[in-house]
Structures are given as C-alpha cells and as structure tokens.
Amino acid sequence: MPIDLSDRLTPLPSATEVQDRVLAGRRDPFQPLVGSTTSNGFILKGVLVVGGQQRALVQTSDGSGALCVGPGGRCPGQVEADQLLPPSWSLLSIDVQRGCITLTQGGKSQPPICML
Image (cartoon, rainbow, N blue to C red; front, side, top):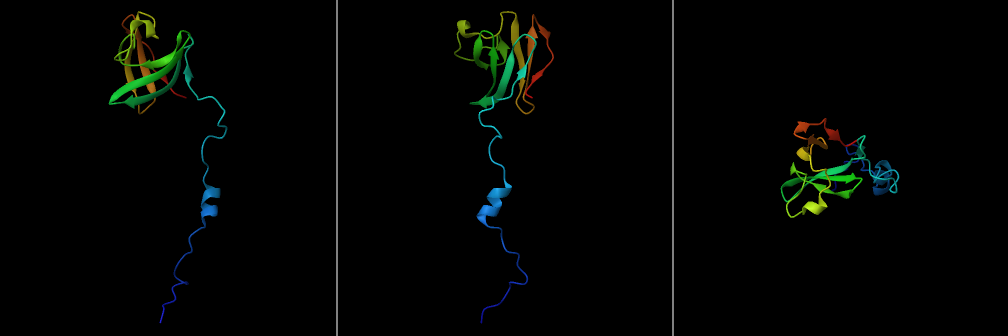
C-alpha cells in the first residue's frame, strides 16, 4: 500500500516558472561594453588572466589590444611597434579581482583606473 506524502511535500515550480523569474543576459545586448575612460582617451575595457598571466584590455587613440605588467605594457611576443602606451609609460599592476590597473608615467605612479 503506497504512502500518501502530499500533505508534507511542497511541489516544485515548473520549468517555465523558474525561467520567468531569472533574468538572462544583458538588458540591451547591443549596448557597448562599459569601460573606464581617462582624460587622455585611454579606455580600460577589461582585465583577465591568460595562461596564468594577467592582461588588461585597453583602447587608446593609437589602437586597442592587451597590456601586460612591465615597461610599455608590452606582453610576451609583442613587438615595440604594437606598443599601446607612450614610451615613458609602464603598466605597474593589474588587479583582476577589482578590475583595476595602475600605470606609471616617467616612474611616477598614477591613480588606479578601474572598470565601471
């Protein structure tokens, strides 16, 4: 004889009820990605870790690409012609958790640039 547990169990919501309660994706998928822009037109688009190495995705008046910690922000394998930062600039640090980078100009640390 089967046991009736219907008075002690809560029914699960249907798949449609669950999907209707969860927002998916961005509100406007055609909206540009948010970045942080400095007064000189430098835009931080994102930060990530590739093969254990931190990188910052940036856009400047000279183009866009990845920066790594070090002189000129050059990443391994990048040639000097692909350098996105001016010669006196370096990338001091990348904070992936906070979404921030710190640049130096002429050896002087600048305020952090963070994602919005």
